[in-house]
Length: 467
Image (cartoon, rainbow, N blue to C red; front, side, top):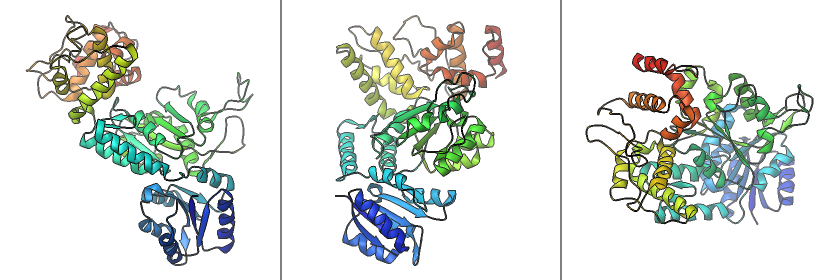
């Protein structure tokens, strides 16, 4: 049986919690102070610890340093004096969750249901580390570069907790896969994982999608609709491109994070939710705060555990592993045994992959289709340039651009995007596919360049020269 330690100086609270937790199938021990709790920790290692913030001889948070392998223990802070600062500090120290007095019985049962039985999460993390040593994989993630090793270690530490995670990285680096891996290694993995792109939903619909609506709340609302917070109850909600969320909705999101409650559109009835938030952005969140795109208080609430993913160009040793992984997937799906041509991997390692892993995957897909008996080719590079003709394998007559060495990456990316858009006759979907980026990213880049939907080719040329 799993073991729980209850640390609270109030006799009635301690007895009530002990009875409730025992009824959930745990063995229990109780303590009324930090000193008594330390004695109990020596006697038996707990699987879950519920500790009061204020104790006669200190704070419940003083016990974090006494826990053996704290990442594998469900640590829940109980307080009658909750604040955002207290909650964030507790989560940074390693608390899995925090509850306010009087303790909500149903929420406590939900937390207890996530406590792993018989060290199952510890065993799975050990298995993943073994797999990483053998084949360079960590769950859904591929790569064994130092940068990714650091990411894996952070995932292993934060996944078993309830801490909010902010994933940072360029478009195409795999932020959603990182979020899914965190969910898969968490105590919530038996519940839903929902991914929402905050920049892809109309500002007029996003509130409805997030929180739902009651029947008759507006014209056309002929039935009740449950939003993402209800659909993901007990699980994980991944909010991608968080800086694209409308400011008024950021206020509501902050309130949900602080209170664990929300209201559907068209009702004043409060609904409780138990959802872990993982957010992501390809922008510098501090710059987004300064630009008025992200509320500062929401940024600090999301930034409990920041996790940055390095671009593919900074972890070139992973390119062969990732490319081989995608090729293996395609061979398996198609029943083929295609291989890379001699020198293909070396050329891939020289190419900067501005679209990161997403671009690499799309590239492998293209050359897989075109590959003959000679195997899959790599991007064609010119010795005097940083990169040219990355799509030569698909068409030997494909147009090329030349970018001198030393050209700032932002300038090179702009030239590549505008030239590809011109080559595609202004067709943005086709342009995004050729570049290996999503359409939303392309629209964002063109907006930055001052190019709108109705611009003709001469307008694009003017924008390009303006740089």
